[in-house]
Image (cartoon, rainbow, N blue to C red; front, side, top):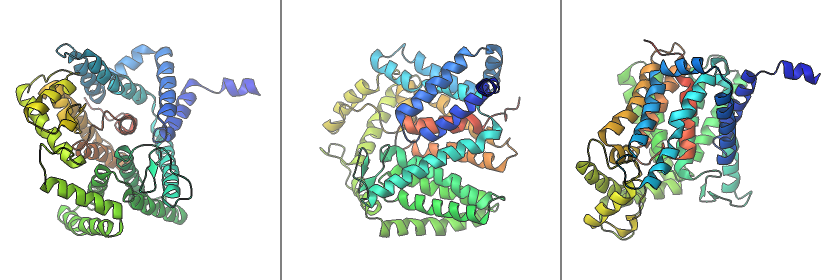
Length: 406
């Protein structure tokens, strides 16, 4: 019996099991997801067939753009002074060199629903735990507090991932033709509970992503742009005011953001998170003005930022900033216009390749994923964080597969 099982258990089957397991673990645990990633990459590197793998990568403009983006970080070590921090940043970016090409060569179209279902199952589990903390059925732990119940990661990462998951469920509700009545009801319930969960947790970037996601979905749902715009102008303010009225946390976070903008002072001793981001942006842009083409180098953001922060008499609390909480500015400061254009080329190819898909589901998600990240990267360095980067890379590995055209 065991001989029969092992005889028919191929490496390909093992890859697919690992990918489904990765899809489930990536929103839940850093260690578990990294363990699966290491196993997948080692198997891929040791399994031979290198010529086929090479041609698959070299014939994909998206994968080439991803690898170039990584290599520019390596080149940026040449003119950086802080090599230690530079190697730290390069280590953060290794997904773009290896993981995306590896996963792209392994994912299979037939299993896309399994990948997405595993991911949504993990989000459902996270949501259940979040509500259990919120209702005080279980004690607070790690990031999960009664006033901000995000169990397995901080709200900075949780809310954007949750917003993307809501999109996946809503798209299924509105566009799937094979949903049973029970399946439809279950997905509607799931979408509603996730949406409510969005506003009892404190991630403002994810909440902005939620409203952006709703806007994109409406334009995908209605072919007429004027009609879509009209619906957006009515629905979004209604959703915002509902959340503002019924969610104390959302109310407080909106009010504090508005107050910090109105009363912004670059030298304020204790600025809020929005005030910090404004100061970080101002000082980062001043660094960019001095190094517009090649940047200051992969590892020199902390040291160059500290100098500029002192020069501009900004709050001393930000003297030890390691990133500007803005992915565009981080790349612009480190690698200049060349690095920024390299990063944007990845998103360009994603959107372009999506239009080659004849599958409505893959096409819509393929356009939505980069658009959502392009929005939230204005508020934080989301391609540095483990959870958000992994979700971005994992979905990128199969949404654009086999749509390259020469």
